[in-house]
Image (cartoon, rainbow, N blue to C red; front, side, top):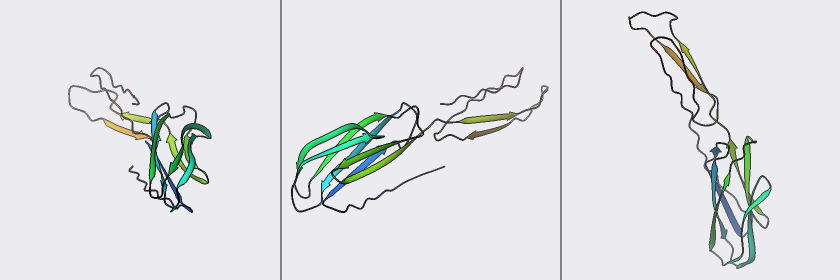
Length: 158
């Protein structure tokens, strides 16, 4: 499955805030990189502003206080670890009354494999049918090993 998202924001004022999380689907404990920008879209200098970045309501990063002349911007970035006990974690960037929220889904590959083979084989070639399914959020891989004395399978999530 292929997924893409192109968010856009509408700002009802003189400041624009963006926030991007990478990756948008993460493994538990994996680092999530956050980056964004604050821009003054008005005609008056913004003074004494502070940007607050949070994860699930907890402040994880602040920028400021800073002054921002018209047409200027301030970039910010930070990193955070994906939780091990949640399916989704929410990041927010807030500057005064402007808040942007980015959701990151958290999960593991969930790969299953089914091998169909004859129960008894001789020295003649025979067929194997291997069916794999990944019900998880992330890409997984499976290694299949066939021993000539026994039909077996091994499943490994990576």
